[in-house]
Amino acid sequence: MAAKKVDGISWSDRILAPFQRKTSSGRYLPEIDGLRCLAVVLVVLFHSHGFFTSGNEPSTVPELLATDPGAALAHVPHAMIGRGWFGVQIFFLISGLVLSLPYAAHYLLGEEKPLVRNYFKRRLIRIEIPYIIALTFFFILSIGYCQNGFAKLPNYLAGLIYAHGFIYDGDHNPLLFVAWTLEIEVQFYLIVPLVCRVFALPKIMRRSLLVFGIIAVDQFCGGSWQAFTDSIWHHTVIRQLNWFLPGLLLADLYLSQNLKEIRKKGGTLWADLVGIPAWIAVFVLIDYYFEVSPRPFVLLLAFWCVLASRYLGAVFRNRWITAVGMMCYTIYLFHNFFIHTIFGPHILGSVVTYEKGDWPRNAVILAGMAVVIIIGCGFVYLVVEKPFARGKFPKIRKN
Image (cartoon, rainbow, N blue to C red; front, side):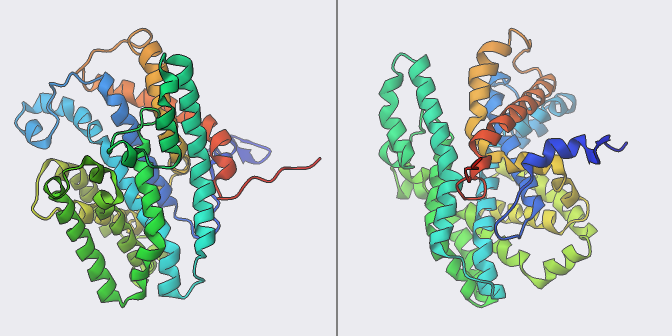
């Protein structure tokens, strides 16, 4: 049934109009916003998960396989939501792709080289200002609601310069504990112009170097508990580089003639047939240890299949899904406010009754929570993030 139109514009168009992305480069991949949606929904569900789990449910694939089939099936939603932390790694790969793509286009296609000054200016406005607003909001909230709220001033100041992990030995910022990933992102932003010089190398050499880099970083960091006893190393870009580098490799593959031809033809069914098992494998492999981890490469394959597929890509291009992906940064910054300041103390248990460990019923409640949080963050997005979304200061209109 078609959406009802008023003055030639459907209600869905009216709702989604403020959440349509406009890029400065003109190279827009709606599937990437769809993948951002997946990542942020996983994180929201994961951070809500603690209210609903008893801690005794089977959580890993081996535990589910060892459980009665009926009980295992009921607890699959719990196990899936418990893997939501992996949304952060999905974000890292997206950052690797999006930030490296203009540099890859310069070296591989001869397009204009991104100016480093403009690159950092966009990052500063696009990312820094909403972050400062969020961090300041939570600091003021802490002063108003906590007896020792003002004692968190050092945490606030450390957060402002993205150095909380360095100053506090890897500890999360109590004002905005998800900021540890943003500190890593900023570190990656700083090295992108240098790392992307890999695209100046011949194809076989650069792709081999990226593959070797992913494996080497994974091996190096896998043993870093022994190499670096200080936990600070586990909250730096060094520890997560094996998730950023696949994004560079994907940028290379995206600009290849092979993928261009596939996308021009509307995608291939083979990518659908491979992509769905690949996405399942991404989350199943979390439970298993490998001497050389295939996880970054399986995630890379899953991303490639979304870009090359006929139907899977269409799901991620859905306008409602891409709209959520577009405001993922705001959702990421503010979702815990809704979870722990609104739902936790005022709704769960008193308005919405539930029992810990009651799956899959709790998954339905979690899904409802996620929808409300996303809608609430949508209003926040319009005020906090959208004015700066294009990396420019909003123009003041003169009457």
